[in-house]
Image 1: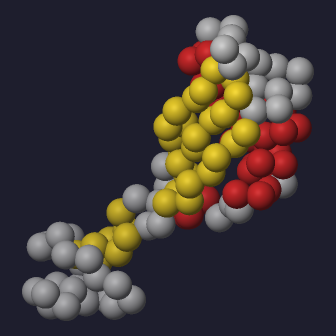
Image 2: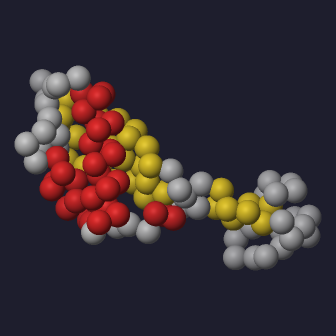
Length: 109
């Protein structure tokens, strides 16, 4: 759970900066699946690092974002293939799936 704790410490700093000292009730987080973490492990790690902060007991809503395989020539999605089905190009790349974004926070009134 160490990678999750490190991620959550960074996420907490972002949340604290945005909250401006106000109590946080909910955080919506988008995280790419290439990070290979589960929503449950992130929630557990976040509850540890957020204890005693403005985000203590805040609900963490985790949205896992998949990576996409895309042709580098024509931009078409290339699911499960080493060649583009549209243009035949072998230059398939991975787009997305590696971001960590604090999408929103809700403050306690």
